[in-house]
Length: 163
Image (cartoon, rainbow, N blue to C red; front, side, top):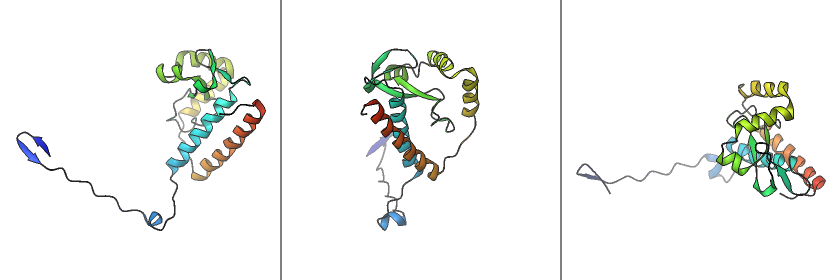
């Protein structure tokens, strides 16, 4: 019971939504959101492995500090909300958790180091790509998941690192 201005009322319980036909029949339906979150995990793992040194450390693209690979995040220069550059390898680099989470990407240092790494022309092209819209299909997402899983396996064998 909840009291509002000297009046009492009982909150009604929300009714459960009926299950879709596929779920009633026992068929699991995968939604686009599931593919995106799965691809996010695989792509992040790939970026961290790609930027890792063979001794299990990495250099943060923002602050330049060398830290253990367990402290790495996949830092996006253009936000993940830009779907066209969300899975772009030039837009994503290993970043320490402090810079990525506490300093919101440490964007000033990130932009300077990114320009040095990929060059001004590719940096400008990346900015143009970020403002374009992109709708990923389920098929594209599934294929990207397979692609980056294979790349992760290759990098783990090559560098001898397990993430």
